[in-house]
Length: 113
Image (tube, rainbow, N blue to C red):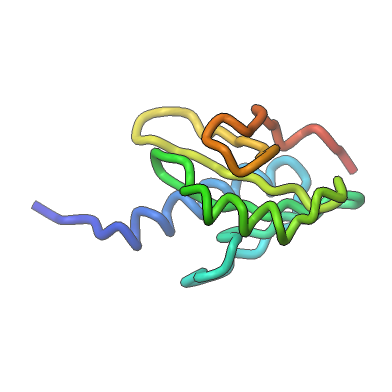
């Protein structure tokens, strides 16, 4: 039986996010081995998304706070979390604060080119 590492599973989900955002008109870059706030950076005119990619659970409060701090609440930089549990749909959450319930559902086709 093959054991899939957390790293390769995370990388696979990052590519799912990149494919989805690319299909919705974004140009994407993966921050390989990211130790920063974003795993994927997605850009389209008027919008830059900093995406923290997780498989099943939201990032902790410190990680959420760092992402929010970088985005600085200006509306141009969007602090997003992408979740992709096994056998479930990809889900995006727009962070509105550092708390566990401080987020809104987000879809990548909100701003089209």
